[in-house]
Length: 346
Ligand SMILES: Nc1ncnc2c1ncn2[C@@H]1O[C@H](COP(=O)(O)OP(=O)(O)OP(=O)(O)O)[C@@H](O)[C@H]1O
Ligand SMILES: [Mg+2]
Image (cartoon, rainbow, N blue to C red; front, side, top):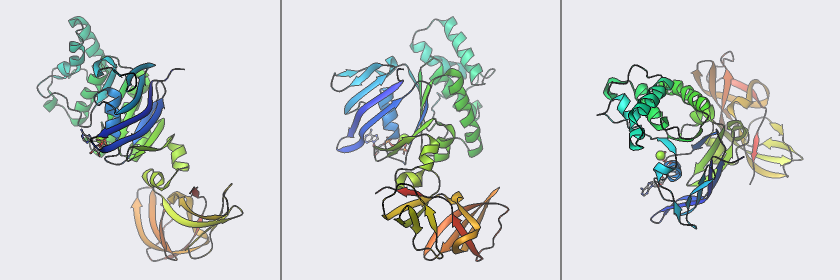
C-alpha cells in the first residue's frame, strides 16, 4: 500500500548549523504520528519541510507517491500544490476577518465559486462545532473556539494530510485535554494522515499511533507509545517518555543485581551478556511494603488516586508511584521490591 508521507535522507542546515541529520521516516495513510522532542530539536523545521515552507539542504520528500522535493532531481513543488493543511504553533486566525471569512480564505485563493465556498465552509463549521458563530470575529470567541477556526481553515480544502505544530499550546490545561480527544476524533472521522508536533510527552502518548523521538535533529526511536515506554532505546528516550529511575546493575547469568542499594535486589533479565549496565525502572514497577530492599521515605506527594514517594536506599534515591491506599509517613522505613527493569544496551 502506498504511503502518505516518505522522508528520505533529509538534511537541513541553517548556515553552519546542522539542524536535521539524515532523517528517514515513512508515514502510512490515516496514521497519527507525533514528532516529540525538546525545544530546538528540529520539530517545526521538519514540518515546514514537509509543507514546503522550508527547503531541505538535501534528500527527498514524497507525498502520496509523488515526489514533491528532491535535491538530486531538482524538484521542489510549492506548498499550495502539496494539498497539505497546517495549523501553526500560535494558531493565528486573522483578527480582522469573521469566522466565515477565515475558513473561506483557502477556498477563495483556490478560486472556487461562491456557492461552493459557502457549502464547504458551513459543512466544515459543523464538523468543528462552530455552527451559528460564522459572523463573529476572533476576539468574540474563546481560545478553544479560535482554535477550532484554525482547524477548520486548515481542513476546508480537504487536504489528505494535516500538519499540526503544538496546536494546543495556547490553551489552558483542562481545555487542552478536551481538545486532544476532539483532534483525534476529527482525524478518525476525516480519515486523514496527521503529523503532530509537541514537546508534551503525555499529549504524544495519548494521541499517537506512533511517536518519533527527536534529539538534536536525529531520530532516537520510532514506535508506538507503549513500545517506547516499555523499551526505550537509551537514557534520553527513557527520561523523555514518562518518569524513569536510573540504576547501575551487574548482570550474571541473566540475573541483574542492582548496585548501591541497601538490601539485595535481584531481577531476572533475558539475553543479557554478563557485565555492568545502566538500567531504568519505572516508578510503578517498584512495590513498597515487602521485599528485600530496605529504604526510607524522604518525600511524599499526593497526586489524586496515587502517591509519589521519593525513597532513599543506600546512597541512591528513586521515585515510586503507589496507590493512595499505601500510606507511609515521611522518614518511615520501608521495604521494597523491584519487579521489572529495562537494561540499556551499551
Ligand atoms: N530560520 C531559521 N534560521 C536559522 N536557524 C533556525 C531557523 N529556524 C530554526 N532554526 C534553528 O534550527 C533548530 C531547530 O529549530 P525548530 O524550530 O525546528 O525547533 P523545534 O523543535 O520546533 O523547537 P520548539 O519546541 O522550541 O518549537 C534550532 O536550533 C533553531 O534555532
Ligand atoms: Mg517548534
